[in-house]
Length: 232
Image: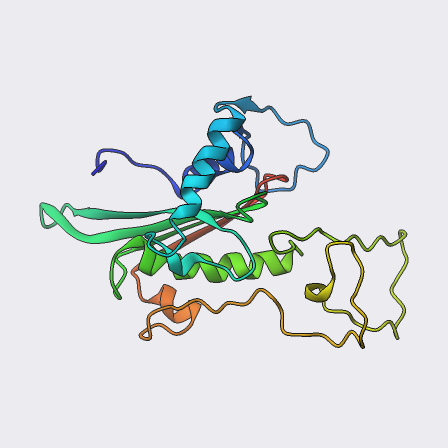
């Protein structure tokens, strides 16, 4: 089972950035590293990284171990983990550690999220416990950083330094902007966001907060693939 190996949450998240970055390994940082020289190391070929990403994407598909990690509109890849916990007081195994680490969008990864739950109460498999937490955290992050759904392009809205949008500028929902950067004809009334925290978590844990509380502890890491920004 690999119980003789140990790894921290950040080490686990960093490992997945290698596949997300075409086999290129970079150090993690707690501050943004835009424009800063970073020492990188190619540890896998691009072809190998892409093949592994394709395999990891299968885990979130129907029939995989983590379909609850799917995010509508985005391709997602990742891997579940389920391990027995050693209890020194009992002199043996007691309880489980469940995890899911993944990235999105799988065709061009920009974010990596790692979730580790200690002693989950509503089941113990990584796909059914940590998978829904990943889904909600990643969904929020994709919205927050304006990462477009799979198959669409990021639409830039450049502003000059010190410039502010006009107060009466009509709001346009980014989800209706087409691949060519144009808004379809119509009144531009905001529609429901494409990304929403709508995972099919067990009915005993209807929200992310309740779900995370259904474990003795929860660790979640969010890593930007390009800026190497890690938060926990």
